[in-house]
Image (cartoon, rainbow, N blue to C red; front, side, top):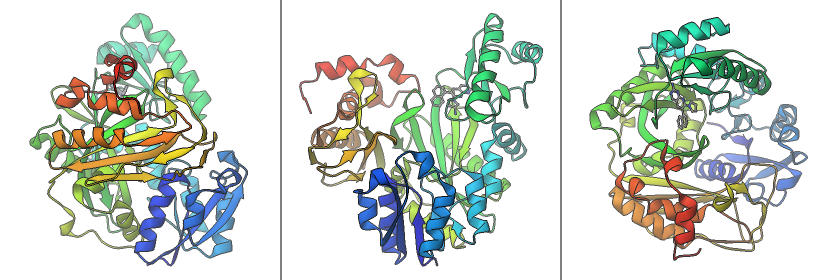
Length: 456
Ligand code: MV4
């Protein structure tokens, strides 16, 4: 087992990783930018190394400084968390080169899933259902026109280097294809330095359902059930839950099996997520694979009663997956992301100092957070302040508990998304479990917040 893990991250996820390391008897090294000097991850780690000035590219994305911190402290493994260098193949390879274990998949596996066309080809070979489309790059406007006719409108143009919504264009008819193709390519080139695009049939108002997977170093994989992440605004997830209120048990089982086939096809090592789009008929299609631990991993931890960070560390140390890894699902869990953003002003960031804080507590309530009273939210990083995860025997009880928890969450000094979550817990579509990725376009949450009697 590793003796000392360097956590190449900040915020709540750095704390989350430090906690599990302590429980496993592993020493921890925090790295931090000068903006994070007073952060809890710096305080709670056994050692801490400053890796540069506030801007991410100078600190948390600075591979040379992070490797220097590894050498300085003698860490034998690096945990990348999510974001920053978590899906950077070059960094994974660099760790290997310097003899320190990258807790995650190999550089080659990250690369294979990072290029979306390659990923899709791999999945088709593995027998995982994929959305019908161009099959490869669409090199010319003429090809785009031909494929549009063949596939049938509406279609979607996506960047092969993309993911998470960047460089995507929906095309409703041939009249729109020229502009969509040209702008998608230009945006992909500018964002990813790779202007390759491909085309797919557009699935209208899909559900976003992902399967948590884990693979060992012997090529064996298992899944840990799904998360429904359909509550999104502009490709930002706001709420995740498990089990999904949408899919049947038969579809759930088929998706799990497909996800395991996907992992075993590439001998995937580590924990990861297979993202699926699910249409109204519950047909599911591979969308992309996330080769990291995700923000919403606690939802799975709560329904499966299983520490995913511990599993990640065990897998990286060479522990095999055993048959005991399949668990029955007994509970329901919901996670709400609390951001320093103003839901009444288009979710505009609201950095600043937290002047007063009370976090929700009680049976079935978990709060993963790095904030404290007096903490100043730096403007340089993402605005996630806390994740509130509730767990109960039924979805109904879980929603009631979440509303109760959100109403006892006091954060003074900055605007937060707490009022949005209270409004959402009272939205009839959400309450009925009858929502898809179009929910927040239909729901006038600003009006609902203004009408709320309860003012957090
Ligand atoms: C799609 C789609 C419909 N049809 N692909 C959005 C993020 C990126 N990973 C892929 N995305 C989509 N791909 C086809 N063929 C709809 C989306 C999409 C979406 C997907 C999941 C969750 C929210 C979304 C919001 C808008 C569009």
